Image 1 (cartoon, one colour):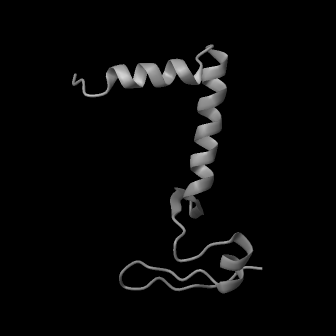
Image 2 (spheres, rainbow, N blue to C red; image 1 turned 30 degrees about the horizontal axis):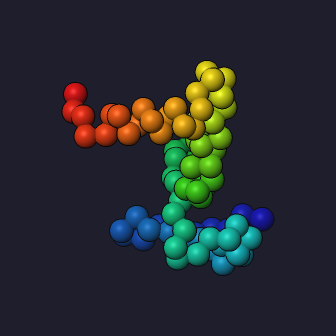
Length: 82
């Protein structure tokens, strides 16, 4: 079921309580907003972070990079400037 919501003069919208409850969205939740054609897609920022983390892990595994190697390289680069 679709709900009609209004955009305020500040560009804000209120998500209906039913949607917030179904998706576990509260005042501490960050959302990503993306324009897709004529649609606005909102999703939890945490889900995007988890998606990127999983992709990073798959690529690292595919290249044979271990967590320890990555942490060692990051530590070596820390403080360096280009």
